[in-house]
Length: 608
Image (cartoon, rainbow, N blue to C red; front, side, top):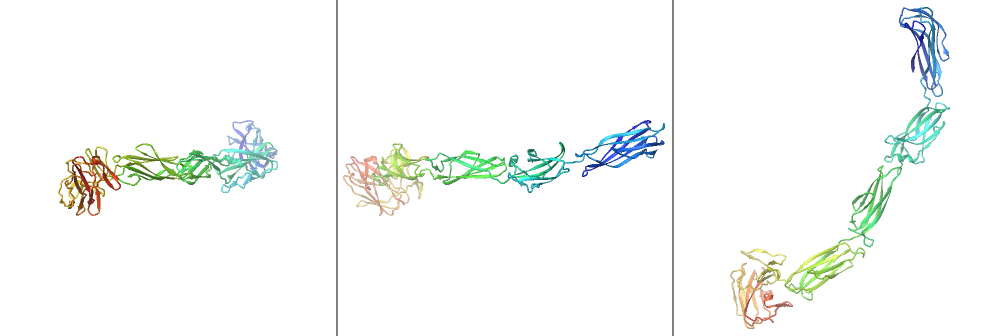
């Protein structure tokens, strides 16, 4: 309700009197009208003044009150001259209205205000004539938004205040950032319920969201004048969809076009796209439990064989994922190997013999054929010499090489297998002839004949320590011990209870863990009598026997067997460089004739 004062003018005595109008208006929106009331007042600073006012009236536009005469007497500092009320004033079509309110009184005499007037054209409150939106269907609720598919439509329902009004209906889409984008506008005349098909292009405005709020505005016009706007919100939802994803895989480091386990890689390129304005944010690819990021990459070597799946998951800006899978076949592969690689002393025909003048090299192994695409080669070299070939075919490696070898030399044998991807090498040592102990003028060795000066151990293991109650060297073997000439030096001291029988048999008693002194067995002339040592009991540690050869004693066609106990017979042999010998079958045969008196010493080992 509007209420205002309109000040008037006083003809005389203006310092004492004042004249004004107080008015108010109450609007009726449904009737597009207002009810106006007005009252004219005369006031005086001298409340004792009284006078008679004539022709008193007030008007609102064409509505005029009846003129009257008023006796003015001040009881409260002011006096009502004229009143008009309940005047209904119709507003213009657009809801606006202006009215003129006027009042007058006349008085005569020197002590009166004379003629008083007040008048003013005032604007009443505008009555809204804009049409009101009542609902938007079917997306008025955020809990049940309309899924946009490019064919379904929104309908805005509204009520119009006048059939003369026209309207403009505008749909707008509001993103989560509250930025409103006007995407379309239609003009309607009195057809506010006409459906509006929501374009799917609107969803491009929310690439990171599955739903958003929009609004519709109804602008009401009277002619070309805009009366007002009514607004209502609605809710839209992105329809269900799945991004597209595909894989392109090319081979890297294959063998004849075949993927090889542990060596081949893949070059991966991922193509992906999404819908309704969404973009692809992440690419995650899994190959053999190894993760890769990005739309393109080269993998690590593939560790599995058989059917290998390459799986990529892409995620768009709305968090929606898609998966693409491609399978490749990977051939199994492992590095070539040697399952057996042995190097042994042997005879010329390959028969194993620890005293042989040949070495036998035996190789077995294998490699991955990769469906016949992989080939391998196997070679053996001795002391870095010329390589000899071992057969490698159809995934199998097998072969034997026999080669002459000095009985006093050691050899390094190297076997190398090479295929398309790997090389495997192993080394073995070929020993000298196998004798438990060898003593020379400047060397001593266990397990073979050493060409190096000093002390050498050619056994895999040897024990040095105390046996029984006597400290010394313990070597236990089922093979005979062979030592060279040691002049007059004795290996150890001790006692031995023994005697030479008339038949040439030497009977020995138990040594109780001690090494015996030397024992002389003398041959002269052309004697070739065998020496028989009968152990009683047969648990000696060592027995040192000295054989003295007389001048012109020929043993070159003879054998000196030594029988230890009832079951073991060992050959007596001296240092190879002393008079020479050779292996003939299972016997040791001398090769020269002694030309002078000599002394040769032998040690026989008996396993306790």
